Length: 539
Image (cartoon, rainbow, N blue to C red):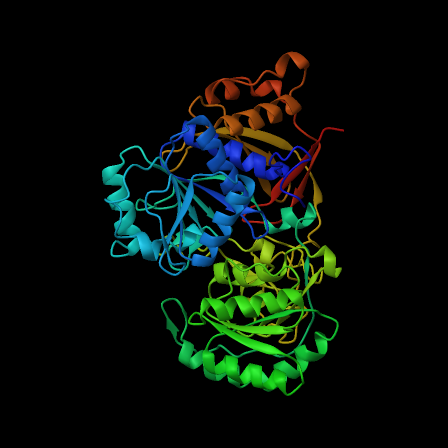
């Protein structure tokens, strides 16, 4: 899809334009720093380029920084801006790229190179952070030093984060907590949204019966100890390689993820014995060598690459149509980033989907990739409750009553039973079906806002077995976009046209509750933390 129309003007996808509009609106109506939660393939570099261009149109002297942890992302994001705006006053500050243009009006930089330059860099109006989940809350970090120095020099500077996984292992969502650096999600576009709109391919999986055993492994820094994990993976390499080589016969390009260099060498050797090309990429692989390998994968001259601690972000090989999981992890963010490598479109190769060979137990541990929720921060009551399908081993949120993988209906009262080992796990929850629920009553009450956010109106639809909640906002300090959507919902529920005008506050809404109809049924979809109300039925 071209980034320009016939006149040469930047052409944005609908959701990209919404992301930009809602983020400017968020900044106008809120203090703090928002995050654009955009999944792989959403075109974060296009969104950033458009926002930079707009900011400079509004203020010709606007000073903008784009900072990230990866020189590859710096290069890609800079190239996207210059492609869309050839005369952009842009420069790069990155030791890895051998460029140090510190005073460019629009400056692209790696945090590793610029973190000591907070006082030298001068005036800054706007900071964009790509892959903002790499920012830790800990004080003694490069990010903390740089952002602290920048804020001291630039009192009014605003910052926007970009990430498809806005949370951190052990810290929970980036926007929660008194020490949060970010303070709200201004826009969200998910993997499933992009698949439904045709901007990503679906990922499929097949039962293998092969699993890296992680029971009893120690954890270091919240994830499995690499030394112990290396031995566990080695036990399965020969069997797994023989299996995925056969499964990948009709697949063009493969990404393979393992925990250690030792594992990578063993995997590459085993693949070579099948007369298939395979290269190893680690965090220490020189940039020139990395580019050679990735370009070879794009061209089809290199069939597979085995990765150790890299190739999870800033890598664009649309031709890749198979991913091999041999790297168990407790990090849901890392899992999404790894699977994301094979979801991009590749019309020139006829790619229609991607195959996941899950030997690491990713789906059994984390569930379908589109149902993964941020982990709770420590001290926040532990992880949300989940259960495992006793037929196919898929992990799902506790409230889901039908397995998205095999259709198994969970009994009303859960019984702890030993899960079946061999499984055929779904990588997406597309099989979750909406259900219609009869409604017997409807109640209204004020729902207190958290962390300084305005209160909302909670409308509770009562059924015989369960209650379902819909939240509306009418307070003047609430987000304008949320108020607009709430007004539309109010108008739909009103008895008469004269009742359709939205209330100006929650108190007014409660006083006018008699103006709303009690529905006969609602359609709910049991995904996410709470069931989603898809449609309200009055007939």
